Length: 287
Image 1 (cartoon, rainbow, N blue to C red):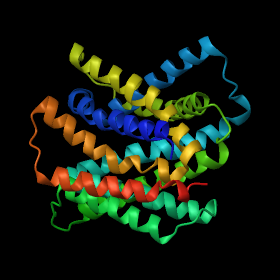
Image 2 (cartoon, one colour; image 1 turned 180 degrees about the horizontal axis):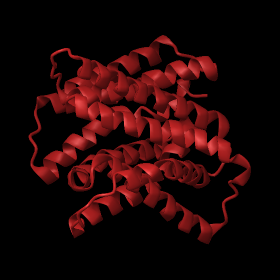
Image 3 (tube, helix red, strand yellow; image 1 turned 45 degrees about the vertical axis):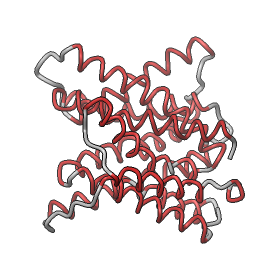
Image 4 (cartoon, one colour; image 1 turned 135 degrees about the horizontal axis):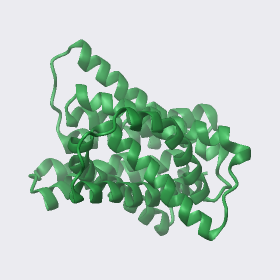
């Protein structure tokens, strides 16, 4: 793995890890679904404006492909994660979300015939264990709502895996900005009804407006081109190991900016996660 791709991986994890801070600011005021919808719609507009200045995007002939990518990479997982968060605690939701690289590896093995060898399998399992150590395991009493939330989180992780492999297969030779714009535009079209249905009744503060703007521009419009570049360079399974690193940055930013406590679990979890990422994205395993 090239140093530039490793830098991209950590930058992407930092951007998506920081998104939890801004969601905590915006979602209680605007609602989870409206915040997510607005984030995607504004990001599509931002990428569209930047692309229009550089060179026009040609998306008409491939709108079905972008629609599928947006459906599996944004709409389905975002809505299912919202359901999971309502029914589960944060730690269990994070652990279940960290199964995305495992699902990606399975889908890649079936669809792209990528090898799922012993080294990579150990790395994937270690990543999930690392996230569990990082966030802590907080068991909940078994109930229909908990089961429903858990299934929702797992389906969301599977959806991310399908999207990563689909992007690797369908868009590997495309400009990453174009792929990101196509995905976000198609997602916006699908999420506009959700945005209208959940439109807030109160005028948000400047702090909330700023949080949504950062979510849209930094955590989405800038982050997704990085993600698709990683998929192109190191493969779908390697790129989605970012799911292991996101909780690390989320906890670090929570400690720095919100004063949330950091314990020994963070250190041990981080070491385990870094080892898992190294095992999965070892250059010898990339194709």
